[in-house]
Length: 156
Image 1 (cartoon, rainbow, N blue to C red):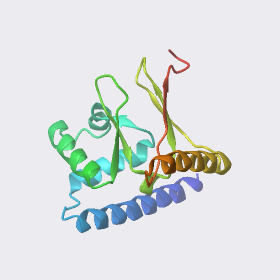
Image 2 (image 1 turned 135 degrees about the vertical axis):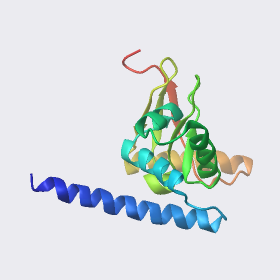
Image 3 (image 1 turned 60 degrees about the vertical axis):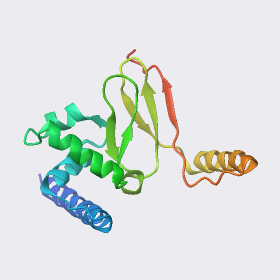
């Protein structure tokens, strides 16, 4: 089909741009953007949802779990990847908001599944304003917010 090669080219361009951004961010903080780190980022980018370390290793068998874990730690500390604690046995990982875009999560406390949710701009503005007002009452200066709703998914 004629549309498929073009989509692959778009994906490739987006990954190239993502790698350039992350490589620059790591370099600013004195870290190298190794092939193992690039592979981790590609798994997260192509998955498009929060995943656990076992999910990451299963998605790319050339990633060793021990080195993947160490690389995830560096990428989290550099602000490239976000660690989400959902309870249960494993943390989930996703690309950080500056790369992925602002969003929130629905976290199932039974099975641990995580679903990304996006508010429309009006709701997001209202949440931001309300949180800023609450923070101002205590002298707190917010820089960002994240909202994770914990409960039970439809399957549970």
